Image 1 (cartoon, rainbow, N blue to C red):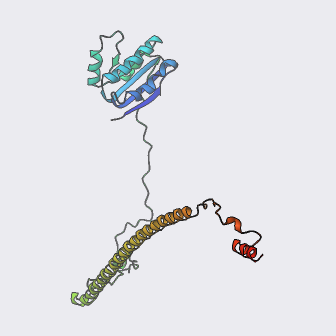
Image 2 (tube, rainbow, N blue to C red):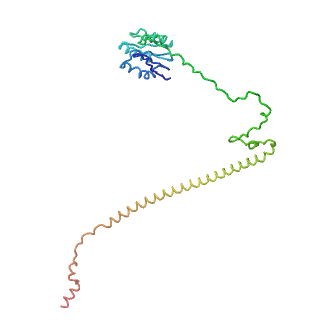
Length: 280
């Protein structure tokens, strides 16, 4: 339950706080937000109108006692007016405290303890007289035969209503037997059945197309996986081939001169030189 707080200034230093609802540990912060700033204001007297306060526990009464003590230090105080019997009993049980909270059965008695000289209870608002509507051009004579026989203007059918003289589908028109409406009803039933069968066929076709699409998607995913596997194999082979090529491209071993390396000189071999020496 929530707590409603209404502030009503009734004097220069008097403030009436009307409470409605329940005052407990959950709603105490709501009341504290209104009462805690009062000691810093010019308000000295606080009157709690508790006629509509249905419930109050020790937490709520403690908040009222704190405000009462703060107002007493300013030379004023806090009083409770029109409290219910449970709240009065709770206040009487706490009467042994140093600064008990005064409680009064009516609002005028509570305001007598403040700076308000005269408290007038505003009565209910005076009702404003209202005139009755005047009916003009009202015929007081009884209807004659000529008025009863006067033709009435045609009435336009409402939306969804069959025109005058026609009956809704499936019902017999005025002057028409129910058997004559059976062909139209049979035609409507057969047409609805045909539409239903057509919808079932279209649904079956869409189901087959969805199944084929799902199978095609599965095949494409499988082919994609195989392509990824082949690509990985090609990458591995490429690394192996590159490693083999790098191993064959090593520099040749240094050449060691042999016994016949000096025979070539000026483009003449050693055998040709010996043949020339023999001829000499």
